[in-house]
Every structure is written in C-alpha cells, then in structure tokens.
Length: 632
Image (tube, rainbow, N blue to C red; front, side):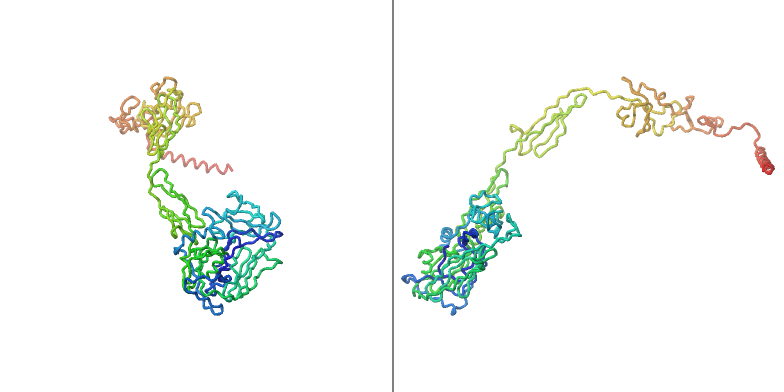
C-alpha cells in the first residue's frame, strides 16, 4: 500500500475513498474479502485543527532559499481556529496554470485509474466459508475487474479466494449498501455467516521536522472497517458487521506516535497541494501547504507543477507557496481535474426530410449526456473536465441532407375474378385503396392500380393493370316458376264480369321462402295482398295464357255500391245509383244484390192484426193458469 507521507490533517484520514489496494486479504485459514475496486465513500472529512500538516518526514538537506522563509505553524495548543474547508461548487469550471497537464498526470499516476467510459459496474455477492460458502457482503466493481467473464451473463461465479458471484449490472451510481444479501444466490437467513477475520494494514507513523507533529498517514476506510483519529493522534480501526480482528476483537488501535522534535530548516520552501476524495481521479476537496522536504519524501519531483503524489488520497502539487501562505489562500477551482476524451458521436441521417439525429449516448462515470434541441450535450461529473477546462461539451446537430428515399416497390395483391352464370358478367372483387396505391375499375372491367408518391411497381412502373377478366358465358340454370292469383286487400267493386284477382308469375325461391311445400293451392300474404299459388308454369307459358276470371273468379255485380263509373250490371247496362221502386227512375225495384230491402206488400189488411195478436197472448196465459193446480 502506497502512502502519502506529506504533512496532512486529521481530515485526510477515514475518507473511505482510497483505492482498492487499501483492502487486505485475511489469513489463508479464513480468507478475507477480495480487494474492492471502488470502496464506498465515507462522510466528508472534517477541517484540520492547524494550518500546517504534522506528518512531515525527517529534514532534508538544506536547499538554497529562493523565496522568503515561511513561518512555522504554531503548536496545537497555540493554534487559532482553522480555516474552513472549501466546498467545490457543482458547476464550477476549473482554472489555473497547468490544469490540463495535472489532469493527465492524475490519470497516469493515480493509485487506481479511472474506469473507461464504456466500463459498466457490476453488483457482486461475496461468499465466505468452504465453497460454495455463504453470502457475506456485497461489492460494486467495474466489469473489467471480472476476469474471463462473458459480459452480461448473470449469475456468474468467479474463481477467487472467496467465491464471488456477479448478479446484475449496477444502476447509476449504485453503492454496495443498495443491494441486500437476501438477493444473493444461496442466501439462508437461518445460517448467518461467520465473521471474516481481517488483518489491519501495516502503518508507520510519520515524524516530519518540527515539534509535536508526528502522526500516522491517512488510512482509508474500507468495507471491512471504519477509521477514527483520536485526540492523542492514535488511530482506531473498528470492524464493520461481518468482520472482526484477531481473537474476535471488534477494533484495532495504533498507539499514539512519539514525536522526535527535530527542528526544520529555517529557509525551506513550501508547496501548495490539492487534496482529492472519491474514487480516483477524485474530486478536489481541500488544499494544504506542506514543506518541500515532505513533498519530496512522498515522491514529488522538485519543481514539477502539477505533480502527483502516490497517496490513499490523490494529492497534486500545483505551485510553490508564496510567503506565509495558508491553505485558505488558494481556491479549489484551481485544482486540476481529470481530462475527458470526448467520444466520437456521428449523427444518423437516413433518407427522407428532417430526420437527422444523433444516436443515443449513455451516461458514464465521467459525464452525463442529454439531448437539447437535437444537440447532444455532455456534462462533466465531479472530478472531470473536458479539454480546455470546459465543464460541458456539445455536439451540434448538422442540417438534414434532405436526400430523397428511393421509391419502394409495391407487390400488387393477387386478384381472382368471379364469373357467375350468365353472359359478360365476370368481374374482379372490390379492392380498397391503400396508402400505397389508388384503384380504378375500367369500363371493360379491367382494374388499374396507380402508385402514390414514394412507391412504384416492378420495373419502376407507375401503374399496374389487371386485364379484363375472361367470361365463360355459362348459361344459368332455369328457375321453376308458379302461376298465382294475387287478390288486392280492397278490391274495387266494379260490377259483373270483373276478375277478383290478377294473374302473376312467382319464382319458386320466393314461394319457398313464404312456406310453399309443393302442394296446390297454397296461399300467403305479402304487401300486395293475398297470393294464391295455383300451379307450376310450364315451359313457354306466360301470364297471357291464363284467364283471370276463370283462375281467380269475378267480382259480384253490385251496382249500388259500385265506385267505378264504368261498372255495369248483369245485363251489361251501366250502373247508375238511384232510389229503388220509383217509377220512371232507374233502380232495381228494391233488390240489392239479390237481397230484399223490405217485406213486400201482399194486399191484405194490416190494421186488425195487432189486436188479434194481443188477444191470443192473453188467452194462452189464462190456459196456463187454469191447468197449473191439476199438474201438481
């Protein structure tokens, strides 16, 4: 594990943003979890209690003084309130000399390089115990960390000191705590896993020149333990759930370091250093000022700005300190960021008008992508920037070429003509117009399809014609017909010799529909009146071959009720309504259709008949009364 031995504050420890190498393996008898590529960040560090870090190395040989001597930081008990830790705005655009070079050095010198833009993250279940083991905890790793993995295969088991099973892609900026062990294959809530015994890292205290400044370098929090820097500068590691130190100890403490009290050269230069947190390359978090000897001891090349330190936290020297400069005198926006190489995104412009567009662009660890009015805008995530220190990078959508699409070739539908019996009546079935062609039925019964815009028929033809269908001229079979009398609902009283019905020919199909079963006569009623079927029509017969009076009967010769002025009586004389029995007036003498209107006068006296009738009634009644006692 590489450590940053330049002076640092207590807030440099316990950030939880160290590279994966900060996790150690457990003894072979009880293996520790696999090193985690990207540990979950811990809460932001607290401000340091003093402006000068206390972890400088032993004094280096004196260097020529090029700049005024800087003041030594006061002892802890004499120091004033520390400067507040600077916050970096989410939309800040980094600036400062050497920012682009520093960004390149972050990529080259960071303890763990940033994942490439296309490097997705995978959620992995870690197991302990004899294989297949028991689910113990969950980590999130880049897909490149899984060797020989057929990408996208879930679940997938690693060959590892601990069994590890990839269960799915991570979603967004997912952290290990977002998934639960119950979703790991083989989880059994009734059999909790034994805690994993962890070995604390080998950390040596650093004692730079100056009084009372010996302390341990920053120790990053891991998935196995948290880190606490105590008031006496001792450091305590506390095991997390599922882990323990040797002998089931819940914690491990590094004793308070002993300071040598070595004095520092009076004319030593100091360096302004940017400190980063988060997965490398990290995000600028705060700024410190350290002695040149401390920076050199950490691997810095003198005079190289920006220059990267190999540390649990990325540390970049950006310039010499000026005078008695303090950490708060420099701004975070001047700390270099990791440079993003913008991907190549080409627009897609298929044939047709106004349809050019960029393909979908996925978010990565370095940037997020959005489409704004057709343009693709990439926005750098914290810790990153685009070339030139830009916070965003835009791909402008070019104008559409407007290239016309070649017309689509239409396959005309198959049409089979229908040819019912009879001459010249073969036709094609009805064909509906579509969005590809119109339909025209020609006078010769041929059908023409006309292609619409953007379409053609085979051989680039604009039309396609179905030829006139051939007619078989097959004669239709003769349909049987029947002779019928149709009697109107209200026949006109026309007088003697007028038929009561009309001779009509009815086709057999109509007769069958009305219930005809083949027996004559058969009657049914339709809208014209009563229809009486009489006989089948023979070949060659017509209605003229039948006598309506003979077949249907006649209307009685009634003159008084005749409504037709042309009606005649039984003698062929015109019917003229009049008072019957009046001499010299036309009439029938009281006879109407053979009926007598009143009793005829026989010439006998009529006056004495009424009294005689009454007398006979009384005599009869008397006889009945006289005979009643004898009948008892």
